[in-house]
Length: 147
Length: 485
Image (cartoon, rainbow over all chains, first blue to last red; front, side, top):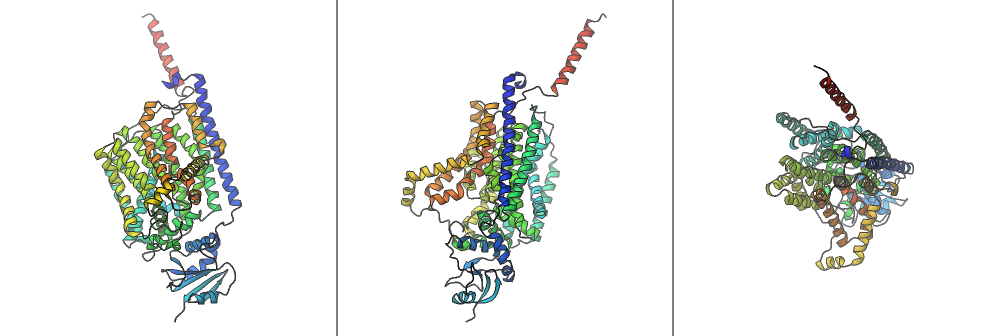
């Protein structure tokens, strides 16, 4: 009924409206795709997760299958760089629970995640750990020092 | 990524059969839209169910590949047996009044979906591990869950993420994390491909369900137009590569609203209400925002359908609600640190007009940021409303109740911002843009219920020859009657 009664002007309005929306929607999808393609070209591992995957993979393989693991770093957890560094390390080392090493730390194993060269053994010793392996790229594996 | 997609197939098959079993037999055309609707809804239901199975198996200490596969096979076999026994048959539906230029919309949809697929591919390639919350919250929880009997409790541990504010969320619902963990358990490969693949599946299911559900309650062209507006929504498409839980939540919210939209016409059938309850429950099992949505949707059903019928929805929601309750009350340790501790602190925040203004401005910006200005989805809706017209006030009043749970959810979000103890600028900046994504597909669905579906501006192509044939028959009859006997 509505088809028969549609006046030519109303019909043209429907057609123009629908076509305009279809064309604009396709163009918006193209625009979105181009934006993502640009982002891919400029991709630069904003939070260091890809880098953490490469750096910490070997340490992850050396850890026992379960249990919490201590975390030592030269970056403070509350720092702008320290927070993503810790969370990225947690992501890579999961399902181990990563626990920042402090006076109460009781984990058998610990991982060092350093942004610059320091005396890794001394850092571990201050926290009660002995260095097991320097795995390169600022990654160090520690084990609780036996009394 | 192929293995990850394949690992979702048993879940989708299970969900599809659940949908076929629970939905009343609906005769509709075109058939491909029915498939789109059932497969999209089946994806939502199947992924929700299997995430619950995965978590329950983990709780029971049997979360390995064998038990997961065995439960998948047993539930699939059971659903298939029930489906065969049901001997369900859909009658033929009359061909609904069409739109002569539907082929243009189908072509546009195909092109837009292809661009959407390319867009998702580029986003995932640019950011394989997803955005911050993906690797800091959702996927790290998935690794804990997939790790085995000794590690799954880390997903609900108070000291996860070093108790950092904004990163440690022991009580966050686990639908997405458990789905990722299930795929990792099945494939044996905890790579970033599983969460990325699931993100794609959830997004495509949302788009497909929007089109299919509108084809069910309106017309195919309304469904096609809605899908086009959805893929033109940059705020939605950009979220797919993030691997967050907001698009899965949007799928469950849309599924609930779409099923409730069809319910009155079908006289509130129990199976449909169970499905709506399942989806609303899965919304609560996906994100905390799903809890107020579930409550609001249940209240709306209680109001519209009353009494025993609403109990069917509660029955559907029960499995996910029980899991959420178990998670929040017994399993998760620690609480969210973003709520005030005293009534006085709450009152002070509520009485601060600057907070109201700041939040209102952020909400307005969230709507502005939905898409590019020249193809903003609200602009596209306005163009369609002018071109096609809107439904009568009476019809609008009979459909607007579907928007209540959506508006209520946004109001609840607003209230959370009012009382948050986090820095308000930080809290709004890190989350407000995702709130609209959660309700956007369902909002589009309701909007398209208020816009008239397009009617053919030109005569249907099939009508002309038929008219000519009838004209010829009439001419022959007149000729015969005029001939001398």
